[in-house]
Image 1 (cartoon, rainbow, N blue to C red):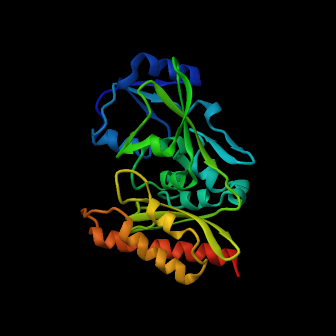
Image 2: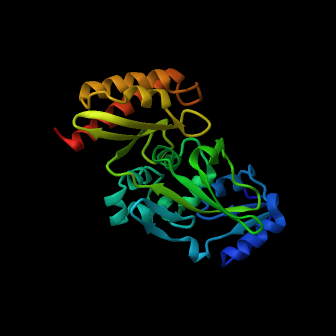
Image 3: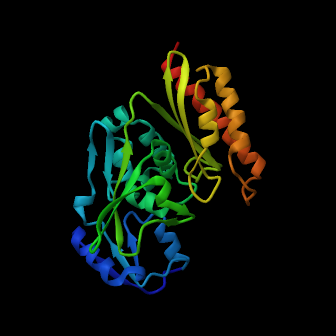
Length: 288
């Protein structure tokens, strides 16, 4: 199939993009990497009046590492982050999750801003953003710049807090030393969207889990945090036995429903196994 007719606008600056969005608002669909959008256009599930191409906005292709965060521009390519030596050192969970996005050809085009703004409930990066308590930067011509925390940004399937005249300009992934994080998922084939994926963060001190964070993708209409499990885990021994217990708790707490791929019970079982494995791997990294 071919897309329905649309007007194409390619802009070279952030100011130009915001002008188009300010004037046309809800009639505009933004294309960056296009890895998710192009199939929707070809199937005519997306029918924009104006297709706004922001690939030429070089100012949005930044990657900045500070003492407390990794900040990425909306046009930063996933492959750039995946292979960035310093990001691997200070926040390895982000490249780890990106490695599960499609295949190398896909990651060469996929943008960080596009991936997050698309808000696919099975996508890896929103889950990492949720576990890290990250945020999204938005900008409009008339209302300026604002920063939205992940929990307010992701609202439902393909739905975010971004307004029609706004553009996602950046995404911030906090660095929270001495926390340790890891991402794991199960998919039918490598490169497919996961049946379920989990990001786990642990803060361990003297053999005790002081705090734990667990986010899950692929089970609801947005990334979810297992808040009850996080609270129950505080103060537990940092052992393999505890990892198994947390896996059982996760299986009971995580929301899930049947779909064409797997049953709810199977998806819950996957989440429980992933949580147990991920906590175990993080504890192995810490050592005795």
